Image 1 (tube, rainbow, N blue to C red):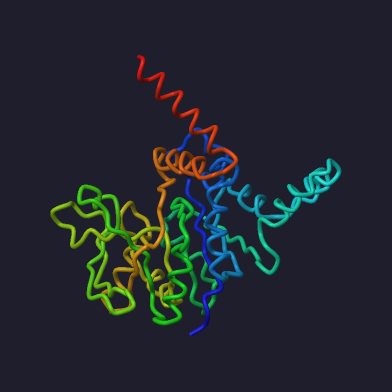
Image 2: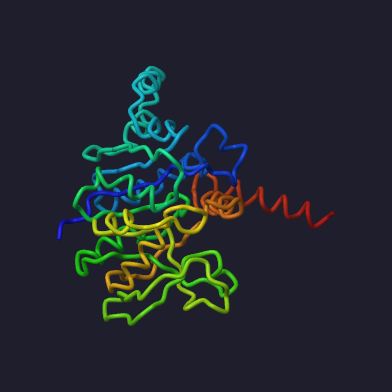
Length: 295
């Protein structure tokens, strides 16, 4: 089995939850202080050994490509102002030895269709999929954990976390099987957004995956599912029923930046952990809490 060196980033979504901010700007470029959400996902992939980044874009998503492309005019202006540290930061958004490929999803036909659009760029290689909406932090990040597991157990892999019973209706929930000595869990199936009383477990699949190229064949044969779209969860479920899917627990903290509150939480936590902002930000929060306490 080949090493996992390619990663797919589906970034063609409309970002309707964040309108009007996302009317002209892709939601993936919404910043966590000074770094866009999608850059965190790219850095996670590169740190895991990924060298080919495949972005599946849609209409009005050229700004994603612009962010990861060279901007020689900006670099020259920064150098002229003596800001070489900022020039280096901008230049190294995509490290040397890492390439970017941009593929267009002609119509918004679902996450499964977006992954399928990447097939010509991926070829017959195993590959990771990262959904930028799920921002991960921690010493060990899920893409690295998935790729390490894939080297030992080369099958389709999911990163999963346990959620509260009242939240199972928001996610794809696993029909989980036995767990081996390495912490790899067999997956018998996945149920998309079940009611609490129907959930087979509380293990939810989030936005990090490693797939073998066989998933492309499954996606090509899928009929439209929920919402009239090609659902990635349906393809995973089909492979799971054939005994071709496993899962590991997500080793990191996840922020759901596809929701406004999750996005706000990510900003607050990053400010609290950043040495440049932490002290002043804590003082600001205390001041605001004191004001609330007097009203």
